[in-house]
Image (cartoon, rainbow over all chains, first blue to last red; front, side, top):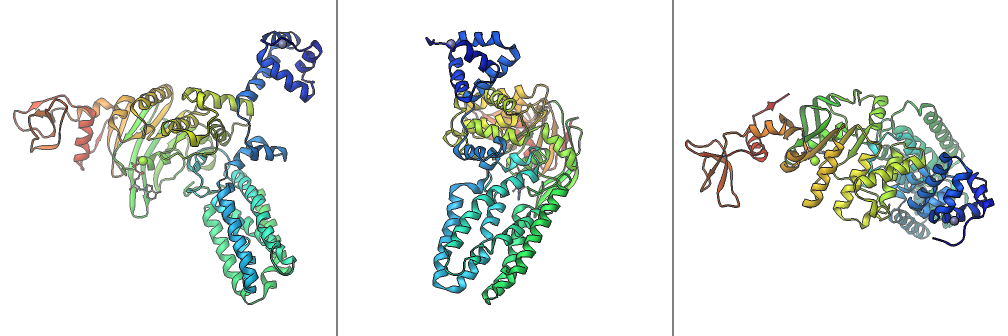
Length: 273
Length: 285
Ligand SMILES: Nc1ncnc2c1ncn2[C@@H]1O[C@H](COP(=O)(O)OP(=O)(O)O)[C@@H](O)[C@H]1O
Ligand SMILES: [Mg+2]
Ligand SMILES: [Zn+2]
């Protein structure tokens, strides 16, 4: 039992839910331990509200504090449920990201040795984020895939949440690698729209195939088309203004299609989902 | 019937995992019994809406899981513990169960947390609620798997080998929890352990090589072996299977020779006999 008690004014403001956060927090801490003040509060408000408050207090204390990535997302305005879903994305784990960063560092180093490798880096740049999206749903990497498949949560929503999360993390890593490249700086950004377009194309394909296969199809097509021209030195074919407009159109078109069909399309998250 | 499967066939490449399987399951605990590779997991994945059969029809909770709308409705009333249930090992028990609750579309945070606490209490995990899953023993992790399956008090509970890897005491606890869950609900579970099935199930389907070889009650299965188990001082040549029991007497299962000393059969005897006779198919309805 504590010796001090909340003053009547604090109790009134807390009971009516108009206490400033600092006061509310210390009042809550005190109420946890003090029956007298809990009773005092009860006389101020109807019991339903007391129960609701008490419930909230218990929940705050009982439910573990979210991990730091979830708290960070919450600060950015992401809902707590969505933040949990993002935190469970397997390809957002440290080892995976370190892998991507490592490969890129190696390529940057190689690109300084041989100029052709610089072009190959541009070809390879979209593959990092794409792979992150694909493997966010691969059975081997997502240990709870089966449980997720049997849950009613919308497959498309989950796909979009994880895709957005993966892009938000991997694109800056790849971009940093691009900036470390010698040569013109517009090149460092030339893969961004292709990545957006390729991702949207893959997402649209998930109505027909699993994310892993969809990304595989899109990535293969990309590599086959861009490698020969990039190696031949015609970077403008794959990365010029025309190509950029094309990828922008693909991204916008794919996004629109997903938006329009979001309630009717069944995303294939599983092999036979 | 909560679960009604007719003629379900599923192949993986050249392997026929399920070959024209029928299964009915209503309130109570229905057990799929069979050796490894018999097709139990494949059927349970179909019942959990994770997999679609190549051929055959499935009705769950009166709905058709091949239709997207129905499938979502089914999933709202389904709990599923997969065979190799994995976890996000960095999550705490509470966070993980809460994560599945989000996937089960419990949107109101407080109501969801209450439900998470409820299932954590039911499975005896309250004291480790704040522990990371990677710090838990295998038996405890299995409980976490059961806890997430119980979220939302589902009408249909699908449990794939729920007692595998548990020590005898944990196994008993689990049986208790599952039989409790079976009251007023439909539970379909699999096991390759006859004791689990005998202790828990109101109905049994015995699987072998993708086919259902027996359906009926545990007593009906045991009755199959009546007159086919005998005691002797040595292994009988006529026995399909025989083993020495603790008191030094041989227990022979098969077609007894004349004058054999018959003894009451167990479920295990009947199961052994069934596995030893590939052409036999028995259905009790
Ligand atoms: N995803 C899969 N890919 C390939 N083969 C599979 C797959 N799932 C099951 N099988 C095969 O189907 C058969 C039945 O397996 P399963 O349903 O897991 O049996 P049980 O659960 O009774 O042990 C086995 O031969 C297994 O190898
Ligand atoms: Mg199995
Ligand atoms: Zn007080």
